[in-house]
Amino acid sequence: MEAKVVQSLQWSTLNSSENIMRRPSSSLRYTKRFNGNDQRHHQTLASCHLGFGKGVIGQRSVVLKVSCSSQNVSASVLESGSVPTSSDEAVILKKKSEDIEPYLDGRCIYLVGMMGSGKTTVGRILSETLGYSFFDCDTLIEQAVGGTTVAEIFKLYGECFFRDNETEIIQKLSSMQRLVVSTGGGAVVRPINWKYMHKGISVWLDVPLEALARRIAKVGTDSRPLLHGESGDAYTKALERLSTLLEDRGEAYANASARVSLENIAAKLGCKDVCNLTPTAIAIEALVQIEKFLKK
Image (cartoon, rainbow, N blue to C red):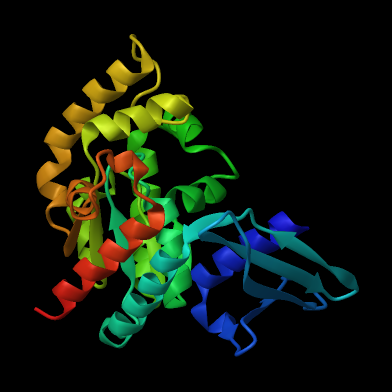
């Protein structure tokens, strides 16, 4: 039941933002009418609570609990894993989000960047601190194609089919407000996608290729359709392919409203390896760069 409720919530938001009503209790209420002779009216209530738990020394954990219930069905609770973040970073993130929220005026934020750049992780942090909803384009495409993975979609239907679905989803999202959207690595190659993303604010997560290759090699390339199947060790083939992709997409990424350079963040924080940067530190820099763009 939980998976169906989550999917319904996501797609009801896409299909009709008027079906979602935000309440002070941080609940989302959505109503969906099913086709049929009796025109049954089915209502599902999902209540979300964001809390803080105890973490390791100098850190705290963020826990999201979701309670779902519907007519004649008792509520059930889903709890996310803990996401450790330093208390200092959490305070800075909250302050920065409060500073720029009035300037955003509800505009959507689109994260762009190469595969493995952390768009989904950083996007979730930004959405939580800004009180925005979060959507991952790849996940929405997978759901639209019946739960088929991105890698399977590329294999069965080809990249063009995937890009067409990607553009359709970005178009739908661009008609809404107060969203943080994680786009696919290749979304920037189509000018039409920029037409939609420029209705909001786009942020390029610029990660050094060597760091990206290490991240991807660590988890494997099976889920990366543009890398899977190439010969050689995982790191080498990832680095070579990423280099080619960046050559093709570099100018497109530069169209973003703001650029978040992990090398610059590492330099400011005295961190030798960008892979040691926390997602919260990257989210803070994203807000800093968004603020600069908004105040130009």
